[in-house]
Amino acid sequence: MKTSNLNASKAPASSLLDLMPGVVNLGIDGFNASITAHGGSVSPIQWQPPGDGDPALAWDLARLMDDPRVEQANQVATQRIIQARPMWEDIALRADSVWSDMKGERLLLHAGPPVAWDDMCGPMHGAMIGAVLYEGWAPTPDKARAMLKRGDIAFAQCHDYQAVGPMTGIISPSMPLICVRNADASSSAKNNMAYTNINEGIGRCLRFGANGPDVIERLKWFEAVLAPVLKAAVRHQFDQTGGIDLKAIQSQALLMGDEVHSRNAASTALFFMALSVPLAGLDFARGTVTQDHVRQTLDFVAKTSQFFLNYSMVSCKAIMDSAHGIEYSTVVTATARNGTQTGLRVSGLGKKWFCATSDLPQGLFFPGFKQEDACPDIGDSAITETAGFGGCSFAASPALTLLAGGSVDDAVRYTQEMYEITVTQNPALSLPALNFRGAPCGLDVRKVVDTGIRPVVTTGIAHKEAGIGQIGAGIVRVPMSCYTQALREAATQFLKD
Image (cartoon, rainbow, N blue to C red; front, side):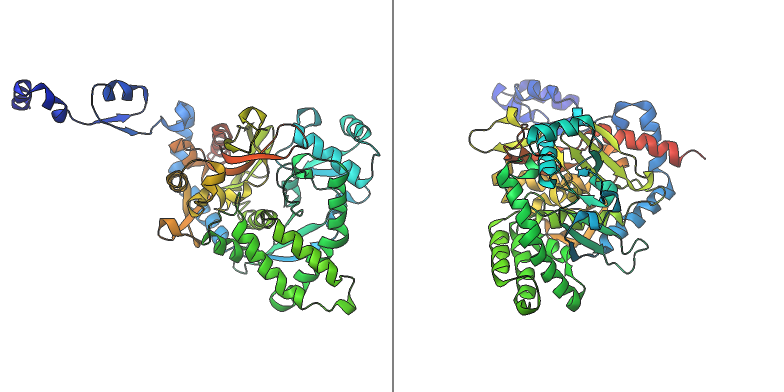
C-alpha cells in the first residue's frame, strides 16, 4: 500500500484521477457530490437503519423475522393467493338484494378506511351527494349535502362488505353489482364472494365526484340496459363453464402490455371477446334483453378502455379475502385509500385498519392541470397491488410509462423493488420483460419495515375538487407508518406468549 502511494505521488497530475479508487457510499447521498466534484466515482447503496430507525421497533422486527410460525403462516397465505380462481358468475341488479343492511336503509359504501363527513375530500363529498340524488333521497345537491352533514345517511367502507370501489368507491342500494366467487377447490377459504360496481368510463363520473344530470342518467342506463345485458351474458356462460375466469384474463393481459390496474386496454379487449360469445347465443325472443341493448352494451365496453378495471379489482378482492384471517400471517390483504388516509389490513390481524395520511401521487398531468390540483391518493384499486398486479407488475406495461411518467427502466426497477418486500413469486402471473419471472406475491409487513422500501402503486390522479375527474396518472408510495403500526400490532399479538 505504501509503495502504491509513493508511485502515485510521482505520477503526473493528469493520471492521478485514474488511480483514485471508486467509492461505495452507504446511506446519505450528500457525500456523493463532494466525491464526484473531485473526479471520483461513487456507487451509492440505498440503506437505512432497520425498524425505521426505532430501536424498539427493530427489536420487534428481529423477533418476528425469526419466528417460524410467521414464516409458515405467510406460506399458507401466499399459496391461497396463487391458487385462487376468481370466477365472475353473476350481476346483482340491486346492491340491496345482496346486503340486507341496505334494505330500507339509507346506507352508502365508500372506498378506503373509515372517514367522517367533515374529513372527506372534495371528490368523496361530490360522489356522496350524487348517490343521494341517484337514490332519490333528496331533490337537490344542497339538500343532499345537508342530509349527509346531519348524519341522516350512514356510511361504511366497501371492504367491510366484501366489496371494492374505484376512486371514491361509492355504492348505493340501487346500484348493480358484479359478483365474483373464488372457485379454488383446494383452498380452505374457498367460495368466498366479492363485489364491486360497474366502471363508468372517464370524464364526468360519480367515482370522481361528479353528480350532475348526465352522471345520474348514465347510472340509470346501467340499471335499465347495461346490467341486465351483462347478467344475461354471464349467466349464459355460467351454465356452460361456471362463469368467466377473471384471473385468466388478468394473466393473459400481463403478456399483452397491461399491469391490470392503471392500464386495462388488453384486459378490456379480452373481456370484450369473452362477453361477445355468450351474447351471440342469447335467445332474444325469450328474455327482456333486446338486440339493441346488446349493441349498446358492446359499444359502451368497446369505447371504455378502463372497463375491466372494476373486474380486476373485484377479482383481486376475491383472491385476497381468501388469504385473510390466517393466524400469525404478516401478509397485507388490503390496501385502500379514501382521499385523506391510506389504510392496510393484514391477514393475521383481523379487521383493524393501520392508517396514515395519504401521499400525493406523482406523475404526468393532462393539459391545463398541475400537481397542486391533485387530490391525495384515493380508491380501493390498490387491492390489485396486494394481489401482484399494478406496481408489482409494472415491468409488464412499458406503455404505461407514457401516461404515468418515468422510463421503461423505472418500470422494471419498481417491480424489482417489490420482489424485495414480498414472500414469493406467483407462477401464474408471468412478466415477459423479466424473462417471464412470476410477479411478486404476498406483500410482507416485516420486509417493508426491514428494507424501508414502500410499495409502489400505479394510480390515476383525481382533481381535488368534486366533479372535474381524472387529471393525470402516475405512481404513489404507501406511507411507511401504515407498516410500522401493523408490525407493532403483530409483535403485540404474536409474541405475547
